Amino acid sequence: MIYLNGEYMPLAEARIPVLDRGFIFGDGVYEVIPVYSRRAFRLDEHLQRLQHSLDSIRLPNPYTPAQWQTIIEHVIMLNPWEDQSVYLQVTRGVAPRDHAFPKDTPQTVFVMSNPLTTPPARQRETGVSAVTALDNRWLRCDIKSTALLANVLLRQLAVDAGASETLLLREGYLTEGAASNIFVVRDGVLLAPPKDHRVLPGITYDVVLELAQQHAIRHEVREISEEEVRSADELWLTSSTKEVLPITRLDGQPVANGKPGPIYEVMYGYYQDFKRTVMRGKNT
Ligand code: PMP
Image (cartoon, rainbow, N blue to C red; front, side):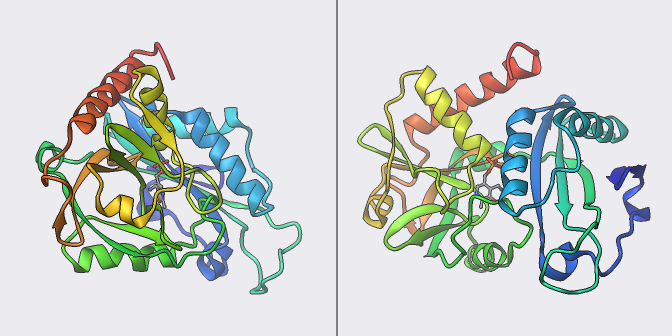
């Protein structure tokens, strides 16, 4: 069951006009929110990021946070799975094709949910492979835009190489993954690229840094060079659906000894504990 412009309906019945600017221009923004035991994880933070994306593309938010919460909780309730991945999208609506903003056009709002499939234990135990590529995206990667052509092409490079993710390098420095944020461990210090216009401000990225802070894991937010990535002790990727996952091969070479590292193992444990606390309603 999905939500579309004020109505709940089966996905197969949902229709939008072909002149929707999301279809014509990719003129819209989105969010992906993980749901554990029917509770949306970090909902406030996802709605704040949505607001940032909408403000950045000068599109008014059609709903208040409370209205969003009601819709999202309703979609969760109408679907059969305990753990879900809620996808929401807002576009600049339906209008004759013209680049300029249309006047008085209501936004198109779509919310769907899928079963949440977090990585299987085997992937966490062995780690995944990644490749590198030049980050050829635009300079507003902080906007969670549905215009994802560059990300699609970059991610496909990984798939073509039999790998799971593409790590992006801009002017010799790590930005993020095609669909994830990237962390690096060197000499016992967790390193993260700064959140600026070159990366999506990941909700999982923030959770990982908060957990590092709470548990006194040494960490630093700073520029990370390609050389530091290639000679890392550990590489991780983070996202709402992948959680925290070790990368153990990069461009066909093992990362350090080719096994998930000790700091990954502790962080993964902290992340799972944190999720359980949230699900008990003690924290958000
Ligand atoms: N960067 C990019 C480019 C992404 O698409 C995503 C989400 N898939 C992330 C980072 C991770 O963000 P989050 O932790 O909020 O899922």
